[in-house]
Image 1 (cartoon, rainbow, N blue to C red):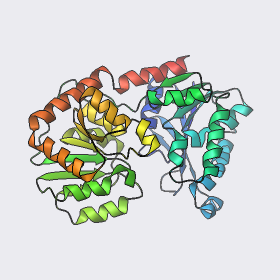
Image 2: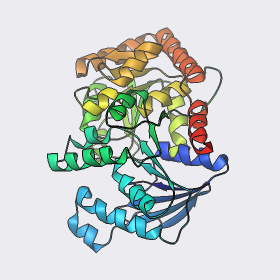
Image 3: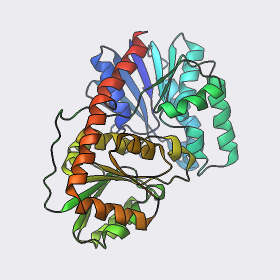
Image 4: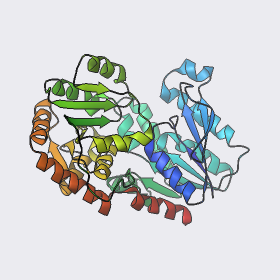
Length: 365
């Protein structure tokens, strides 16, 4: 099949989209991906591992509107215009903010429409946007239930939400990762090393993590990623001897870096509705690397960690975080056991080999 994927980021660090597109290419499908490069930072046309990428860059009208919610309709329009002279068998829309593109294309030609819900989008945007925007997307989500041929959800916990608004054909494809090794391999760090790679926002407890670790000279912390706090994180890390900030790292370095660490940190604010039900990428990266994870109570990641006994589930505060770090650094035998449990969970349940089969079966049907 010839599949069009739609994405509202420039397709540089989005591992879920990359793994899905790669798996479909390997299954014999042709993937064209229309992405949104808001800052014109990347090539407008590029082929990445047999994935043909077309990036829509902001024009002067979009720049004048400056805020993403106001720019989105123009992105949808320009993406649809690009597809006018293209033929596709299916449109695979990543997240609710690109679903309008798929709906428009489906109204014009006989294609299958796949909606890939990376999260509960309306929970996500209610943090920052007005009720008007939230209401618009809730209505879109509900309207699309009669138009979408298949819904993919990033966690089984999303299913009740979507069933309640009318979606029927649902498959969960988790953000799991490919297996690195069938056997546990212990880290070899001279200094006990913590790792966080991901989005840099206040909801991820990053600034608090820095404050905690800078008081622990025997502990090393490596932070990598992008986000609103990137500049602030870089500034703070510059003056701290035992913390290193790397900025953005290539997607193929995430799992090797995880395997070199002792512990992965994934502190997510449980007060956020989306965080409570969304499993984290860090969880599955830690699992395939055989590394324990520190997560917060009241989150989906906390639930999975407790079920698999593959890390410490703690309160969302600095005292609990410091205590957990010290406990793991002082008990290497516990770290190893939790790491072995993590790898066992990856080998038996949480790995991309399992999830990609579900994705391929959707298109086989």
